[in-house]
Length: 312
Ligand SMILES: C[S@@+](CC[C@H](N)C(=O)[O-])C[C@H]1O[C@@H](n2cnc3c(N)ncnc32)[C@H](O)[C@@H]1O
Image (cartoon, rainbow, N blue to C red; front, top):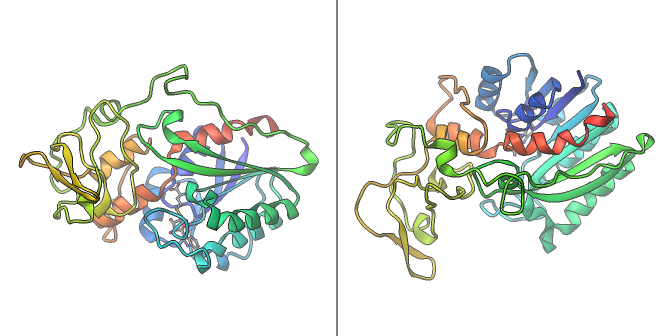
């Protein structure tokens, strides 16, 4: 069984994809206690270290290193400051890479990283990974093309150790208009779930910012992006449609009940299946949405790592 070390592991979206591809995840790490709780409730064999990655002094030997360092510096929803310290966490990833020297590595991040004003940061990351001895390629992939019922585009950086002389190919779409299978829709993902799961969705008002854009998609469409902030979670399709009044101003077509996706629906729309959420004190509603929205859709990560399997 090939082995992996996972950094910035969150509640285990990337790692669920790894495990499905046949990897044993030896070590995972994050600073968020509830992310660890959810991870271990779903995958209890991993040694999960709850600490700042900078404090980790030794890593187990492994075939693969994966890491999805935080993206607040680049994401649409985050504060876009290319100089923020958080954008330097890739250096911790590069330190682990130099120490473990795995056969391959995979990084996921928000696609905003390819925007012109962040390109230098992407260039720095690729250069650090090449200096560590890896052939590196990157690509923006769409989760919907790999069977996830959601519009979510993410950048993947994949590296293989130079001595292996392996040419990695990014996966071709399996779902969509020109692919063998149709897109997975909201109905496919959550159609069997209760329509009004009291206590499991964020029920505060739809404030002006929420109503500054269309947040609803129909049952037979892809969901809008599942985000980490509960307030910005897209609408459940049983909610009334939104109509545009003017630039950045939308309103519901009628007064029938409207609600955001629940955190369990959000997990399904991320491609998790039925994720177990332990009832720890720190597992507030907001925190449940956060760990799910931060995650990499497992089917997308599975598709990316599957192309590496020949070298293990
Ligand atoms: C994009 S999320 C990763 C999601 C995860 N790979 C998944 O699929 O569920 C980034 C994670 O990095 C964690 N993080 C942020 N700063 C960190 C640090 N200094 N050390 C360790 N983890 C950190 C955050 O708590 C967050 O869970």
